[in-house]
Image 1 (cartoon, rainbow, N blue to C red):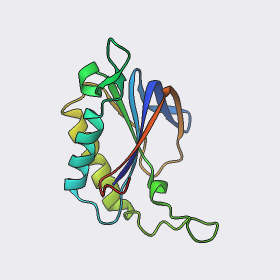
Image 2 (cartoon, helix red, strand yellow):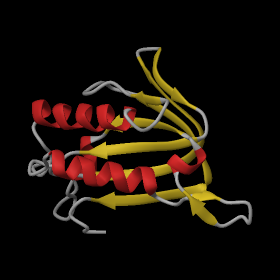
Image 3 (cartoon, one colour):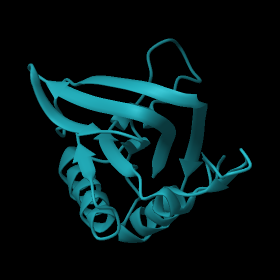
Image 4 (cartoon, rainbow, N blue to C red):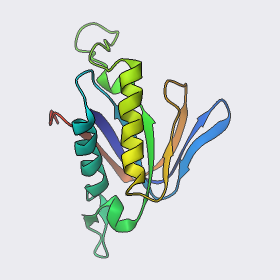
Length: 149
C-alpha cells in the first residue's frame, strides 16, 4: 500500500460538479492499493499517517501529528501510485490491486480512520475526480507499507 501524504490548509474533491469530500487544516492522502495488500497493510499505513509528525509545535518544529492537532483527513483512492514507468513511456499498472479488492481496502482505511478522526472526507472510487488543495509548507511525504521508501 502506498500513500502520498500532503499537509494542507484546505482540500476538496469534486466529481461531476459535486463536492464529495472537503476538509480544512489536516492531511490529504492519495492512497494506492497493491495486489498483495491486506488489512495488515491498511492498519500499518493508517497508523503511520495519523501519527506522522508533520505539523508545527509552538517552537515552529514539525513535532505534532494529525491526532495531536485534531486535524481533518481527506482520503482519495489513486491506483496510479502503482504505475511502473521504468520501461517504455506508458506506465504498467500490473502491481495495482483489482478494483473490487482495492475498493474494499480503501473503504476499510476510511472506516478505521473515522474511528480516530472526527472529520474524514473521501473521493469517489473509480471516478474521474478534481482534487484541489493548498499544500501547507509545502509538506509532502511518501509512505509505503513495504518500506520501499
